[in-house]
Length: 82
Image 1 (cartoon, rainbow, N blue to C red):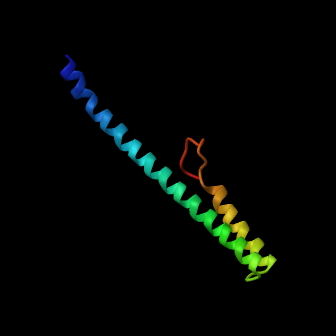
Image 2: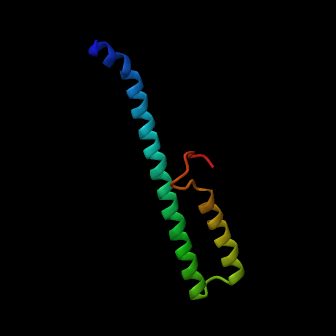
Image 3: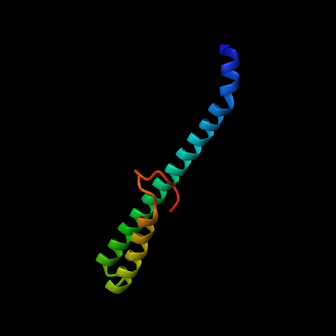
């Protein structure tokens, strides 16, 4: 009976495995996006501090980056789509 139960449960376990791998990949991609946006924000602040860009350009570019950051799913979200 245990062999039959194992055989019947195998497709479900396989599907769960695939879904877990997809979830891990999505989380890794979101984390990479967050790191990229944070690096862009740091570079933007350095450009402002050095005088390479003006305050108006800084504000516009910063807002775009912050909007992108806000659209990323947060850790507690059950849904990876935004």
